[in-house]
Amino acid sequence: MPSDSELVWSSDGGDFRPAQKQGAKKGKRRTQAADAPGPAPAGSTIKVKRETSGRKGKTATTISEIPLGEAETKALAKKLKQHCGVGGTARGSSIELQGDHRDKVIAFLEKEGHRAVKAGG
Image 1 (cartoon, rainbow, N blue to C red):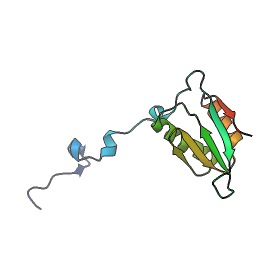
Image 2 (cartoon, rainbow, N blue to C red; image 1 turned 180 degrees about the vertical axis):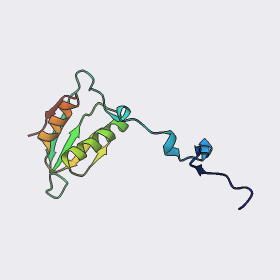
Image 3 (cartoon, rainbow, N blue to C red; image 1 turned 90 degrees about the vertical axis):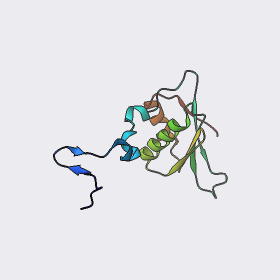
Image 4 (spheres, one colour; image 1 turned 90 degrees about the horizontal axis):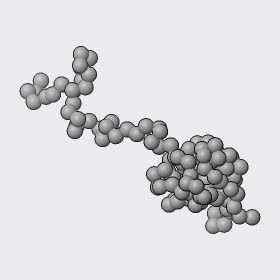
């Protein structure tokens, strides 16, 4: 056994690695409460519309005018994709979901404390 080896793990005392050698993710875990978007500011309304243009005839649900920061918008997009069971993306201050899910999205956003309306024709 080399003389410069360090004890990494033992059932007696747990993890002996110095803090800087541990993975970057271990010390920076976020709680779910920090990821959860808060209620929308007064007077802001999220627009939910169905689009097909530029998508070779395929339908997409677009959520725009989201009054959240970029990180909160990405977290909201992840929750919406899981809720609707579809793929999608967050682009800037808008979210795109595959398929027509306007009613589900509006119900979900209102349950989360946001004000959402159908937009477009």
